[in-house]
Length: 116
Image (cartoon, rainbow, N blue to C red):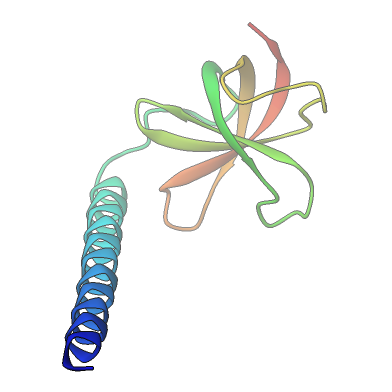
């Protein structure tokens, strides 16, 4: 019976350690993201309103519009591109025209022009 309790205790310790490692790693990712966001706020955007840029689609999101929006980066600067066709996939290269910057100037909205 004593061996059973030792095994249970060891299992509990292992679970607690695993949860701690996952939380620690997640907080590290959040800190890194926060540092990147702060750095983006301190630099001028590498894109200009009205100009078209070519970049790869990193992911899709609903963004604030509720529509499917392609997310990509130009020199590390995030562009949310609307008007993308349903056939577009992650990794596809597109061309989009910058329409506006967000309030902090750390990302921009763009409209789809075509694939590259």
